[in-house]
Length: 262
Image (cartoon, rainbow, N blue to C red):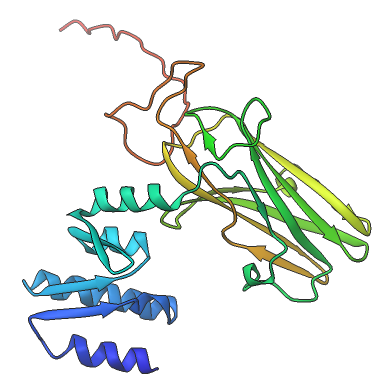
């Protein structure tokens, strides 16, 4: 409520410069939507909005130019797209393809006494080698390890791939194929194969969830990985003329139409 009141007062003072620091980090979705709308309205009136945030989606939507700060020093001041790309490149560790998931700090959306909890995640390239750097159109696998303290029946698990800005690209689950998972007490491993790989070059993260009676273990952002813009094996390359976040491997056909006689 303090943030709501502070933003409401600041937004309606009609000052020439509006400074907003991480206002979208709190509040519900409706409040955040109102904040975005008001800031866009203010900037549309020719007034200046200085928006401080780690939310890449919000920054790309609101800002034309962006400053990148690191330990209080100005590292870059450029077009928003270029600054975001530089920031994400510096924060994504492509050398680490595995992550320990036992840290309780990761479980802000889980129940402490969940009967099943994730313990580890590993990304592997097409050769089966752990890697956080996947080539364009290269198939890859994601392996998840988890442990059950008791027998768990009808376990629903789901994996989501997200852009670096936090947008969900797509998700998959064994239940899509009619699988009914029963986990006995002990450790288990699940593997999903991403083939074909439709992801455009860029930075991504993986979220994983488990749900059943007595089970809620949802980790929205675990290991990070990068898709390169080339494939050294197939020679395929993401062309500069492409847009979007996915390569769509659809089949095209071409036919010549007969001209009608007049």
